[in-house]
Image (cartoon, rainbow, N blue to C red; front, side, top):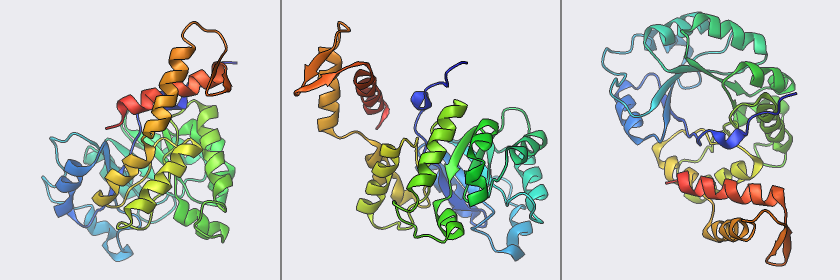
Length: 275
């Protein structure tokens, strides 16, 4: 059996959501985002407006952009889903984010309706979807955690301890499928930079590979949460240096063996790629 590829072999990702009914914000979002923008026709648009937003003015979707552009469609089975997917294909999006993903079959059907190379991000935000996390991870390009909806579906608080199991399962599912580490859910506050950084740091500690963002103000604090702190970077450098000859050594009074060295190298790699 072939081991899964390392989940942190792919870069961190911080998709920035923008409402589909605000085309005036598309170019600004693409200029601000770190790597990707998600135009949202699901939660951000009222039911009576969902058909209208597919008539986005020509030129509103930036063609010369430095980020990838995704469309968060409405969930499979809703009256808007088929037309949303058709719009994503016709408008030339780089991929689709599927909310309320609850089976690998939904991803397979979505891929059949998209052009080759279009990426599919599966947003897992229900108990049923979580129970099928492994098959969803195998079918999708990447998992993302819809923590707010998951908390509502589980009837639990939107807090770290009640959602610990859900986060851990998504990280494990992505790892088993050999896919990039999943993207953590949003922080509802757009003003509390310390909270956003702390939430991002928790996601990084859990093994996530990025975080969903709902406002440009969240970008810098989210990046800070995923950035290793200076003391950790210093420790990692000393571990790698001390173990250069491959033998087991002691650093700061602690025995260093292969898994510790691997973690140290991973920390240094992240420090090198983080702005």
